[in-house]
Length: 270
Image (cartoon, rainbow, N blue to C red):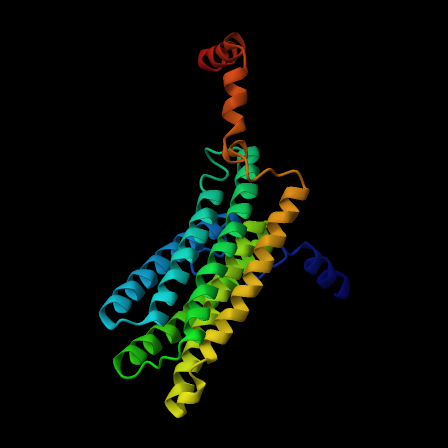
């Protein structure tokens, strides 16, 4: 009997493996490739960043708030960063070759590093202006900024964590840097919210959010310049126009027409 039960156990098909839960997979896209998820999250990030920037610019005009304008400009840079990642993953596995995707990765990575430098000057400049002239925001401007900063922290922190995971899964330096950009925006939003609450307790805390922004801008500047230097040391001449061109098309133009026509005609005849 034991032998029969053992034989039946061996012959029985193994149960299907349980799906592994991955906490930061996008809803409904758990079985798709990580590159596809990176493409989708880039779309989401561009949309949310543009909306946040538009709302921030509108409120800064209506309320005359410098801090709200800084929030809007930071989200504008984040939208450009996510747009570069969207372009980098566009058409992967279908109409775009792996070589072209690798070239896109290099250019997107350098482009986001340059955006770090731009963001550092934008955020740092506004922080210095705020620290040089003490000006408290009372009433509605402070309320509007508080309502922007708290949701901004939650949304962009979640986006940053998802991007960071996808950056490691796809081995994409550009996606990792875009994650840093989103996480920096989330950290700045948190500092603004905390500073707003501290000012309500005592006006002597008027400098808090600007000081946090100045530290963040210094970190972004050093990181961006260091990355641009490393790319230059690796032979990536990002300051030249040919780095941003399409060498694959140039090579195709340099080929002999007979070879291209022969291969095309052979495919068509089949």
